[in-house]
Length: 86
Ligand SMILES: [Zn+2]
Image (cartoon, rainbow, N blue to C red; front, side):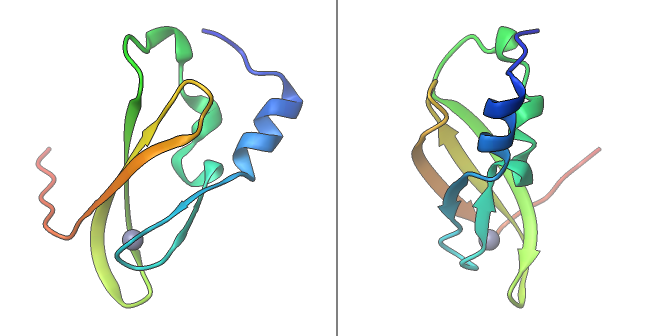
């Protein structure tokens, strides 16, 4: 696993990545556990991360965030139709 140094971890955790287009929630690095991503397991960029949340009277929905290798947002997509089967 590639370890990020403490300074980078703190920076990424508090970094505002994007605003959810559906509920207007501010998504920060810590919301998607950005510092826990195992970079050595990533085969392909941009990386897609799904963040499920309920906010601002909006019921649970999924926000897909596309991150490039510099942890910059390349795209985002919200889906209000969600079914998680385990
Ligand atoms: Zn949202």
